[in-house]
Amino acid sequence: MTVTLNIGIIGPGYIGSEFLRQVNQYQIKHGFDKLAVIAVAELDRLWLHQPTAEAPGIDLSTWKDTFANIKDKPDLNAFASHLASHQPAVLVDTTASQFVASQYPAWLKQGLHIVTPNKKAFSGDLALFKEIQSLSAQRPGEEYPMVFHESTVGAGLPVLDTLKNLVATGDKIVKIEGIFSGTLSYLFNVFSPSNGPASDAKFSDIVKDAKAKGYTEPDPRDDLNGLDVARKVTICGRLAGLDLSMENLDIENIVPEELRALKTADEFLAALPKYDEHFAKLNEEARKRNEVLRYVGVCDPNGTSSVKLMSYPTSHPFASLKGSDNIIAFTTERFVNPLIIIGAGAGDAVTAFGIFSDVLQIYGRVTYGR
Image 1 (cartoon, rainbow, N blue to C red):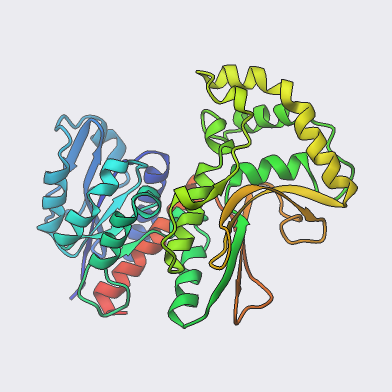
Image 2 (cartoon, one colour):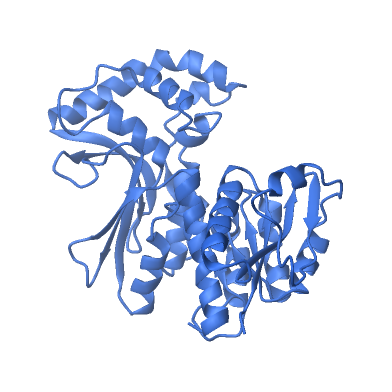
């Protein structure tokens, strides 16, 4: 008998919509009775589908048009109860909401599995993180619901899975360090290239270009302040066994102090050229040492964990990064020469891939116990 894993998704925006597209492609290839989406919720509407033999789930080829006409108001309690009554079920949270993240313990107690790229539950309040860990299964065969959040760090890259395996097999983490932000990777790969002549582009122009290409947040200060990288470092530290919090990190905000209080992104971008000389000087000093600038997060169990702008020799793996790729290096007792993961760490398609991979892991466990 085929087991159906029922799915409910909260916040079907760009990433959520791409996830549903990938699920639809899977259904077309493997059948519609393995994965069935039975609930969709966002800020102003709620769609609860009652599964039938003829329609086990929502038609994902036309869901957007139908969902746009739904009039039911959102009710997360009703959403979770609907999923809980059709188990096995996984709740996919593609929001960045702290409130939604705070509901995870209650949903786990209802027997719901959770998959999410939402960093708030894993990098915010330490007590919430520990409660989620205590309520979720950590190994195959356990009866508790499962929580997977691979896409909170590195989008679709196998960063957290690798880290969990290192810890589970008894390896000792010496250091985790990397370029965790696709935005900051792009900015400094262009501004401070590892080969060829120095870029003659001004830092402010590169930031404006990155925003125009959609690489940054609507307000680039939300990338440049380092908080997104800090969340990812915190998540890695906690999975490595540290009681790490954002407050413990040494975070360098590279937004010039005078520009932090400006009300709009446009005001910030208009004022940023005044600081081009500052960034050019940092770049020139690094080049004199045959080094490049990179914005790096470091988790050091035996020292200070930090998020800051650093310089590296042009021969270093961090220096040769291209485009907006991420790179994460694990130095352990076994991997004295770091184990390195590199690749696209941002984007709707790869983030949705990370989410979908987690969902398929849950499907495999509930179906085959592995």
